[in-house]
Length: 299
Image (tube, rainbow, N blue to C red):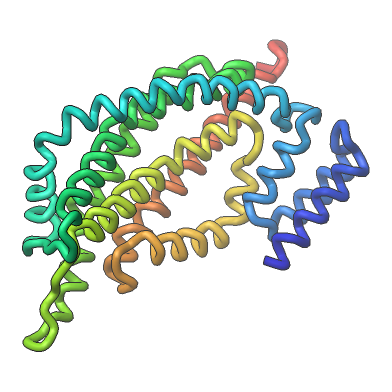
């Protein structure tokens, strides 16, 4: 934590020294600082450096995007409600399918209303899961001006890729990581320890991991979009690969249902592969940008 505060103070000092843009001297010093600074601090600097050369994100753009996203929230809420109305009648079948796929034992209710609320909770999470396309569409609609102004024209490709990556990560969790993790945990039962798993808690347990895996699979796309905004570059990602590996290991320990090496590798392995794919995409974007910015006489 102290390291993060130290880097943040360095960034604020540099911003005070040059509120409009960073000079080459400061950029050279920044490259050495970033070799040990977390990516989050670097992104904060780029956002706060809104009036910089080409690497900054203007505050006005952020406010416009948030305003547009706020207008789209109503459509998202309506979509979730409509999906919930359609899904609730089959919520019992969904709960049975969840148990048969990941748990293979019956759930219990520890209070009178728990069965009802667990079905209601499952309906809400399932409607949110099925509404991901409209959610991503509204997010992309709000923030796409960032990228169009920087030469990205394939907006539909980005949105479709984001949706596919999310569902791919969710399916990987549901059919691979979650059943193996639950099986490992249930392996500790004995004649004196019999599992009695609450229906409501198990629905929440599964939802956290399914959505967590889905979002982590967005890593290559996020890195590519940050590269288009010039927030990150391939040299920065390559230089800080060891921090990426450490972050992946920590995130895998948090997101996987068990702390054993096997289940952590089910999460950490794909995440590291996705990180390397992201680095490759960033390099491709940088080469294309360099070629586009090259004078015609030099091409």
